[in-house]
Every structure is written in structure tokens, then in C-alpha cells.
Image (cartoon, rainbow, N blue to C red; front, top):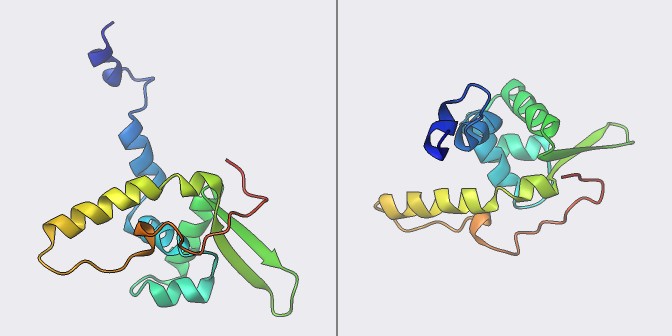
Amino acid sequence: MSEKEVCFEPSYTCPIQFVVKLLGNKWSILILKELFQGGRRTHQLLESLPGISTKTLTVRLRDLESHGIVHREVFPEIPPRVEYSLTAKGLEFRPLLTSMYDLGTQWLDQDPCICSITTESSGLELNSSSTV
């Protein structure tokens, strides 16, 4: 079988399709973009993502966590405090998001914004309990 035909095998998963399914929708991508600024609490994400509901944010965060992209840390305080951050696996999305930013900047007729995804020192500290 030639390499060209392997994409049509039922047992083969297209790499692009896999990543698209992994990210799910626009909210997952925008959540990742926000987490490139560093750890965020739920209310911070809600404030920075106008239009997202609490339920949708929770579902997206849980999905990203289940894939090892986002780390959820619960602090034993009253009231409980939860913070979300990127894992090493989550940090691997930087080139993809940077490419999306670059393409959007190229196609839009406006001055580019300052985006956390395009700066290397975005305040990220990789959580030591994060896994790849």
C-alpha cells in the first residue's frame, strides 16, 4: 500500500483531524491562548473570554484536563480556590496558536495586537506535577 492511501485506512487517524477533535471548538483554543499568560482562576478566564458561559468553560477545561493539556490545582482553602495552568503537553500548542495569530494578522486589515502567544516570556511557569 502506498503512503498516499494510508489516510483512507479505517484504522488510521488523520493527524489534523486528531488535533481538531482534541481542541473541540473555538473556546478550547481561546482558553489555551489565555493560559499562555500563566495560571488562571475560573473567574479570570470568564472575564477574559466574553461570551463563554460558566458551564461551557467548565466542560472545556475538564476536556482539556482529561487530555493532559491543562493542569487543575485545587488549593485547600475556604472558600476553595482552583487554578488552571498548561502542562508540558499544553505548551506544545504554542507553534500552532502562533501560526493562527500570524495568519489572522496577515489577513485582517488592522494593526496587530499584543498577544501572549507571540511573546516568549508570557509569565508561564510549568507546573511540576504536569505530565506529558
